Each structure stands twice: as C-alpha cells, then as structure tokens.
Image 1: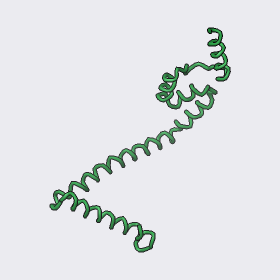
Image 2 (image 1 turned 180 degrees about the horizontal axis):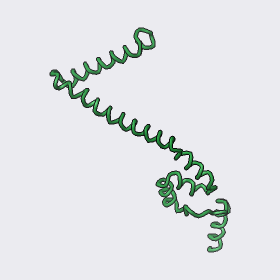
Image 3 (image 1 turned 90 degrees about the vertical axis):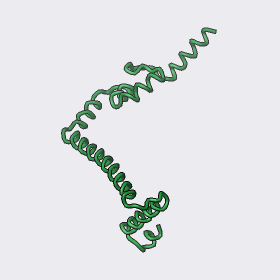
Length: 132
C-alpha cells in the first residue's frame, strides 16, 4: 500500500509485484516445486474467470435486447397504468416474494381492503370485548 500512496510504483506495477508475491507464497506454502504442479493454478483461475465473464456478457446482451425491444418501458408503462393496490403491484413486479410474504402473514393478495389498519384493530378488539 505504501508503494501506491507513497508514489513509488504505479497501480499496474504494484499489481504485478502483488501477483508475484502471491505466487511465491503459494509455492512455499503448498510446496509446488515442479512447473506441472504450478500450471494448475493459472489454469483453474482462467477457467473460473471465463465462466464469470461469460455470465456477465450474456447478462449485458440480455439487457441490451430488452432495452432495444422496448420491453422494459412497455412493462413499466403497463404497471403504471394499472392503478393497483400495493399487493397486486408487488405480485406483478416480483411474484415469488410477494406470495411468500402474503401467505406467511395471512393476507389476501388480490383483494383490496378499503378499511385502514387502525379500524381493523378497533373492530377486532370490539369483537373480543363482546365475547367476554
């Protein structure tokens, strides 16, 4: 860190020195003395990096296609034109968490309740007081 902040080395030089030190530590700790043993490290690293970059490239392409076909704008406009309550909106945007929350808490997802929660609480307390 001193080499970066002290102005001794550029970020590229510091990264090269760090990679070389990591390789030296891996050779010393895991006792990888032959080149065929050392070759497994960059090969596995390259394999995992290519998998991650392939996923990122596919996601960028998918996002570009959604945007160029105006699918995201069309869906956003359709949801905005619904004027639905919060549970219907949550279900339309992301159905799985909406259903799990609704089922766990006992809410009716697709019905609209016009009474505020305070009135519901007062009504429930009134019913329990009458039953005593």
